[in-house]
Image (cartoon, rainbow, N blue to C red):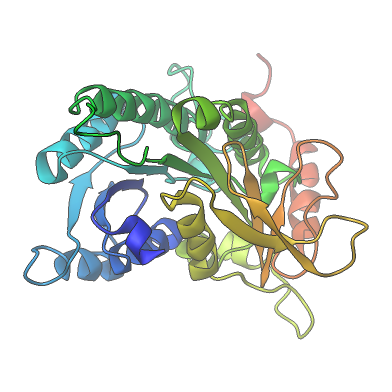
Length: 338
């Protein structure tokens, strides 16, 4: 895979932490430049960027572009930075996301004490971050890829057309794109939307070599969970209980999905009814891959069995359900009468 990524450039939103940081690290190891687009970098991400500041220190470079993904001009700025620093972007990952925080949550409506969604703004920050920003970034990426191709030197008899590059856009969906925990309605909507959006763009692959795919991770060991006591308490940490999936496991699958290889394949679990073995399937536009503990599974559009097994469970989620239902029984939720 290294040769297929070497010398390329990726834009990764949310690269300051979690899955996106693990993906950025993988790309840099494969000698792919990375634009880290995020509001800020965690200390571990700062170390990665600092170690890849110049060609003399590393074959690939990393550049931090401070980005609020809710602001469309700042999304455009990521592409300007990629062009200025590296001549353009070859891979785009609009991966930044949040998991139903109290500041933008269905259960903490605009105007409630913990919400930062203004009642007069007509929008939810979670949907802007998790759904609108990936959609807008994908528009920008498609335009960027197409413009770079048309500006290149046209082929002639003495200059035959080279290998037509695959231009990957990799999204991060979730097992919440199928399951629907009561705790996180807006998050569930955003991930259902991402999976549907990715499938909608499948025809771009055979017609324009723009390959839009997604991973659908299970419960990932990242700050999104580890540093959120309200959510961490819902995991069953007893022996035989819930299990973490590492961010690196997800990043490895993402690396396969973005490799510049027209006939790329990925190993996934056997189809239902075919036993417990594995099979190899073609990497193509519209593909959504669930990543759980030691397991990669193709998520079918119709008749899918749904997420299950290690890395896909939150054993105490019922506690949150009960608390929400009890809260709704108290007077005044949502501001009372409208």
